[in-house]
Image (cartoon, rainbow, N blue to C red; front, side):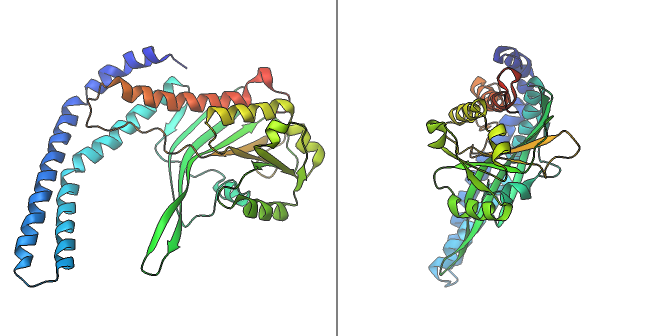
Length: 319
């Protein structure tokens, strides 16, 4: 990982190259906004003479305004996507990672759900995929946005039930059975889902001696010995540190022998409600705004900390 001042000095000339395009996009948005107001007013005036009901006139005016504003925002939307991809790619390289705007395949997504690490969803999207190697282990991380469909008497709508990161770590250690580290408090009807997962995978509650760890997490496993081999005092300390690093973002994890491919390999899945990371911020501020890059740099530093907390060899006694 390079320090922030070095990263900033390398990125500033690159950002300055976007500034003229940013200003054009901002002007186009402003023109679109003025056009939206004018078109909405004109729609109201014209339709008022037709005798249409007020609600219909209102919705027609809003549709006209939305169309005009969307048209005016096209340049800004396209530029924002381009800047995000370029910045994330360069920052990923600075942190020794590989970046893609979307995962080619959301790795083990169904397993995250089947183990109760994420809620069931009716609508889902994925973005910002990162991959790399550290301390002999491979890892990848991607963001997921999951929504559930809800119905009321008058409408169907969607609510967000998960927005955060899903992490896969593959390490050179054989795993046997399933060991699930869940929360000791309810999220997404957690107890019901984890109870179903436990029944499906034949898991039993594993008692551990650390009261601080037990106040936040619960551990279930198919093999008491293997579970205690994996969830060692050091690993418990790591998860508590990760919980602190993510500021209590509901970290949960699973080891499952069915995930890994090949002898002598094991895999771990981690989910955390981090919100939406890796965004470049508003393009209504100058491209060379240092705060923009500082915010992105902190997101990447958080990823690096997650991986180092889990994999740093000096503290490994269970992984």
